[in-house]
Amino acid sequence: MDKLGTYAMPTAAVLIVLFCLVRKVPVFDAFTDGAKQGLRSAISILPTLVGLMTGVAMLQASGALELMSKALAPLMNAVGLPAAVAPLVLMKPVSGSGSTAVLTQILQQCGADSFAGRVAAVLSGSTETLFYCIAVYYGSIKVHRTRHTLPAAFFGDCVACVVAPLAVRFVFHMV
Image 1 (cartoon, rainbow, N blue to C red):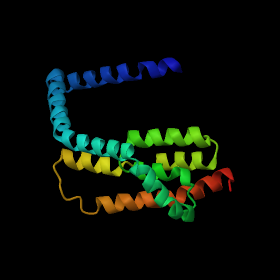
Image 2 (cartoon, rainbow, N blue to C red; image 1 turned 135 degrees about the vertical axis):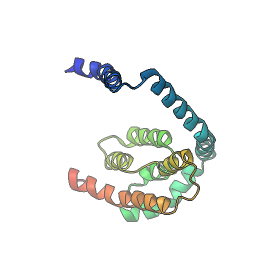
Image 3 (cartoon, rainbow, N blue to C red; image 1 turned 90 degrees about the vertical axis):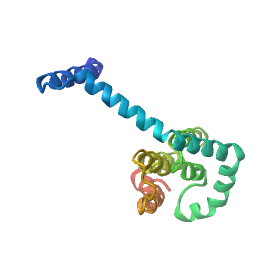
């Protein structure tokens, strides 16, 4: 079974090349055109990504994330979320790598089998880095008016914050 996974990518690459040859597609030309388009897209979204990453770093380094987490704690308790999860709730919409670091801290401090650890894991898997996705996807196609995207994505994250503790209590019979 282990060897099957080892051969999956090379097999897929060979099958794609064979398919292109059968259809008489110039494989190398198609590859280089795709690489050029990918590089253009990466360059066009680079300023947005740099700004987003700088903002996240400043938020963490300034201590603002910790202050906002403490301010948000009473609301989170009312919803049923443990206070330890507040930094994750604030970081996840902005940064995937930042939220992964926060999740790791929660798991180390509270334990993976704790209520806070399980809720954090559920939130991490069921919420999205919405500002990052909107910046990357809309930035790559040069859309400046996102219309209902941000409110809908934010609403989805809020629903996840309400449902995550309920799901953990239901599945793991935790109080």
